[in-house]
Image (cartoon, rainbow over all chains, first blue to last red; front, side, top):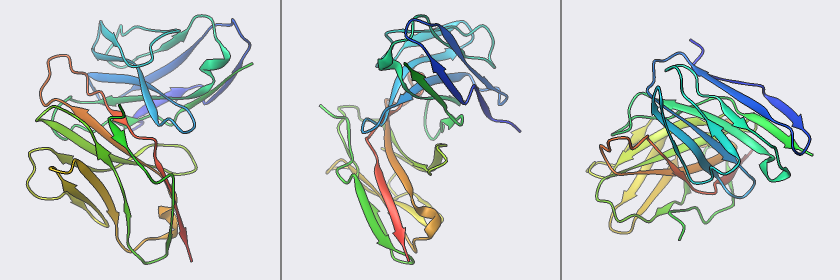
Amino acid sequence: NAGVTQTPKFQVLKTGQSMTLQCAQDMNHEYMSWYRQDPGMGLRLIHYSVGAGITDQGEVPNGYNVSRSTTEDFPLRLLSAAPSQTSVYFCASSYGDSGANVLTFGAGSRLTVL
Amino acid sequence: AQKITQTQPGMFVQEKEAVTLDCTYDTSDQSYGLFWYKQPSSGEMIFLIYQGSYDEQNATEGRYSLNFQKARKSANLVISASQLGDSAMYFCAMREGWVLTGGGNKLTFGTGTQLKVEL
């Protein structure tokens, strides 16, 4: 029972490079989201998806793209990395969006942009 | 304005004692949910407890309880009988709205409280 799997766990990029953070869940959850965690700022929502083919922006979407072609996968793309994108990224999923539906988080991906 | 405010950046508690971590929130919605997550030094986010805005009883989960004071918009986490393994960062979070078409289960997080349990 893997839950939410994020890869890679660590990545170092140079400014201007592109990369994709992978997120996969095996719980048949409809709702998936990406957060970033910066020191002193808690977690902030980047993008989210309410089902395959449907995505929307969160609080801090600039510089990131997402797509949701399957229920299981929700990759986060950085097209041209900037030092301001140095952060820890968390993917999360849930079965529903009401009541006590709890977000299950992946282990996180630490990204450093030089 | 901050939607979730955690005013205690750091807290110390002695082993076996109880500790309260403060959380206040700001919303104009009548329906919302409040969550607490624990983040140990290993980095993962662990769900602890949930309180719905219409729940009349305070939520409890083992040694964790949520002191929900709706009129004061506070949702404090109480940890009883603290253990060394409770040392971690604790985040309060809120989901606004109840059943939202396309709502997406979006959470707004506070900045966290670092709890250190001492012998």
